[in-house]
Every structure is written in structure tokens, then in C-alpha cells.
Length: 329
Ligand SMILES: [Zn+2]
Image 1 (cartoon, rainbow, N blue to C red):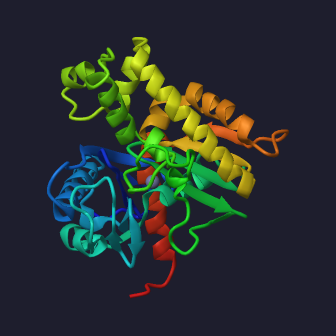
Image 2 (cartoon, protein in one colour):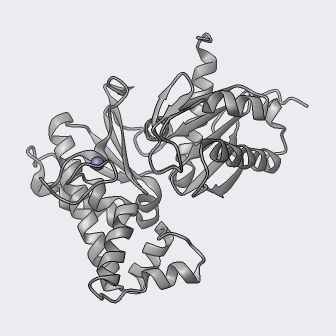
């Protein structure tokens, strides 16, 4: 039976996990499911896992995907007409892939695709920690570091490439970034870069750490946010050192963006941001302070209120918005 109230699906495609949610018209989650993002294969394999995650969430919400008013997707990379290009941190995704069309055929309902961080920033602005503000910077601290912007109450995407806060330079000729450049904030603060740095200190410099033992114990192929949090709880010196370095880079990078845009609020989200929570949001604010030009009125720094579901709930908003507009074919 098709419910009287429109019901939406949302999928947040991350570098580590795929989060799916089914939400009603008032953004309440009716069911959710999570799967790890494939670490090999290509876009078609990733799309297949996204379909399974959405079907699992729909099952939990007792609805068929074909009964949904539509499914929104937040994806990394550049998005144009439902096609996703150069989604870094995803396996074999260098070229263009028709993600919307593929999922539409698989699920039997409408699909709209947007940039993952912009979608999550919009969700925080409309429903979460950014509700009180007219201008907002979303910083998503996970595998990489993504950024989303709300300026004057509206999302700002520039010419399609705005918000790449992870590639703000915090050190000239600094550490090598996954983008191929040097000294980017992500090269210090992205979880992938943090793992490479920790492994080098451990294997080449002989520094002691429980990080890799913890990952093996929990059968994680990577150092997930949970592994970092556990190492911190144990007082692991190497983990503390690598995280300190990440927080310093985040402070310098975010402050530089605030100096240009003077936003009212900064929302810290992403896997690490949400897992490490308020104590780290406070530390990031402290590390920002020496770099702020207008330091007498710093922006408010919050943890993303929608937490892990923010990206997926934001994706349902994207779908609802796209239904409100005439189809562009
Ligand atoms: Zn970079």
C-alpha cells in the first residue's frame, strides 16, 4: 500500500561507509541501514552496494523502494545531471559514471544526486546545528576533509567546485596530499593521511602504538574513527600526536576560510568529527583562534547535530526539493 504521506529514501555515500535512510515528510527516520563502501572494483560495484543498503533500510521501514516518492543521494565528486566524476576516495572512480540513472533503474523510483558535503551542510542548516544562522561553514572530517557553505541563507557552490576546504594550504611545500598537491589541510587532517602518517612513524621510526593492533582486533581493514577514539581512550601517545597535528591543521585551515567569509557558525561533522565530538570541536575552536583576524568575535563552532544520519537525511531533502521543481530532463 502506498502511504498517504510521501516517503523518501536517502543515501550518503562515504569513503568508508554507505548510510541509507527512509524518512517521512517531516524528516523522521523510519528505517536505516549501513554497509561498508567497497574497497575494490569500480562505480558499478559501489552502486550495487548502495542499492542493497537502500533496500535494507526500506525493509526496516516496511516499504518497497518503488513506493518511495524518490531517493536522494549525497556523493563525493563533481555532480552534473546525476553523473558523478572524479569521486576520490572511492575505488576506480576516475571517469564519469551515471549514478542517478543506474540507481533509478535498479530501484524503480526517481533518484536525485548531489554533492555529499553540500547535502549534509544543507541538512545541518535546515534541521540541525546551523538552524540559528544565516551563514555557515560545514567541515566534514572523515577519510578526507570536505566543506559546504551556506551564505546569505542559500547554499553556495561557486561554479560547482566551491567548499573544497580540505585543499586549503596550511603549509607551503608541506605534506603530499591525495590530490597530488602539497601542504593541503587534508594531508594532515584527513583520516587516510593520518593513517599513512601513523604507519610511517610506527614502521619506519619504530614508534610504539596500539592503533594497528586495535584495527586487527576489530577486523577493520583501515583505522576507522572508532579505532582512533579507542586509541585516544587508552592514552596512545602516537595517536594523540597524530590527532594533535590534525587539529592544528584544521584550526589553521578553518580560520583562513572564516577570515575570508566571516560566517556565523562552523559545523564539525564527518566520521571523526562526530565520533570525537564536543571536546574536539572545542579544541579546533581554540586552534583557530590565533589565526582569526577578527578574533574578538569568532564564529560559533558546533558538532553536527544530525550526526551519522545527517548526510542521508540531507539526501532526502535534496529529493523532496527536486520534486518541488519541474523536471529538467
Ligand atoms: Zn589536496
